[in-house]
Image 1 (cartoon, rainbow, N blue to C red):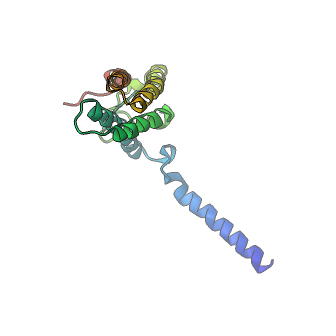
Image 2: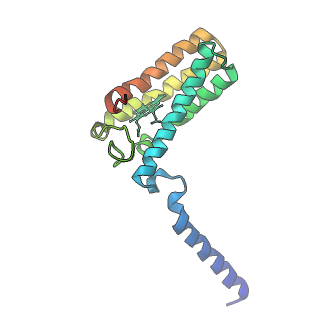
Length: 161
Ligand code: HEC
């Protein structure tokens, strides 16, 4: 075997090893443990909350700029496109660290998918409203988007006091 071939083979096997070692934890929820998956979900939800908050700040004239509102709406829209299976992997209900996801969520998966897929069209309208700059229209779209969050939280999220 020439040196060159040996080097190529060595490089390939190192790459394979690296993948085996780190491939599973490359931010892909499918390979992460339940505690990590709960944390990921809560962070994803925080992105939604932050995005909605940025739009609300503009609507309420609390110092939020239209630019921040646009970023917020885009964040909500981006998250709405994530497959709910990746956000709600099985085995991450209440009991896993501080998960507030009710076990019923996995028993009513069709409903979860319905709730989840309602976010995207609402977020698209929100995004368009923010781009129009019309505060009343934004407020209306924000309310509609927020209801898509609330219905799922009402059914499948443990209330924290
Ligand atoms: C299909 C169901 C569902 C939808 C739709 C949904 N959520 Fe959630 N949300 C949950 C569940 C379940 C939890 C609890 C997660 C946990 O503790 O693991 C949660 C938690 C949260 C949290 C708290 C995160 C934390 O720090 O613990 C925020 C904020 C949040 N959601 C915002 C939103 C917003 C904003 C929307 C709409 C744009 C939304 N969610 C849509 C199910 C949903």
